[in-house]
Length: 222
Image (cartoon, rainbow, N blue to C red; front, side, top):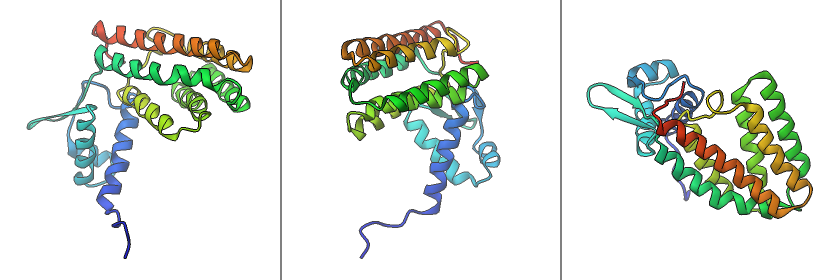
């Protein structure tokens, strides 16, 4: 007898629909504050309404969208408090991880990600830049061998990026963000644990403070 039940097709489609909606929020195709119908989203995704509704219910539990009676589903706008909560946790997790990564992280892989970030910045490709940014952080976290830590931080990043929150073009440039990562890499190349932790702390605090200031002032993502 099998220990697990087969996954039903609607559940699989719901997972794909959730990922597609999150991606569209992240890259601005579904802007925070806008209202959409389940039927409209299902038509755009090329699936029936049932898996799309299931996906949106999952996103509502996560605080990414909000159903409005007889109107549809609204993409929620991040608040300064939301941003502050995420970055408080990231500081607790990533600063000691950066310090601990000195002497054991794969420097070649980090250098490759930083070079890819620089190339994406030159092309003005924010999506590609942020993908390499995420991998840069994941490499540092993974150097400790704790997969749950990597997954936890990925979820925290998704909670911000999946809401369309970004400082790019609003309070700093891709080049500035790349320079903050270069400082982290430089400390790790030198094997300086204290400096690596300090560079990570500066980067995360600056990112969190700038994002929180944007939403505290009522500025919504463009």
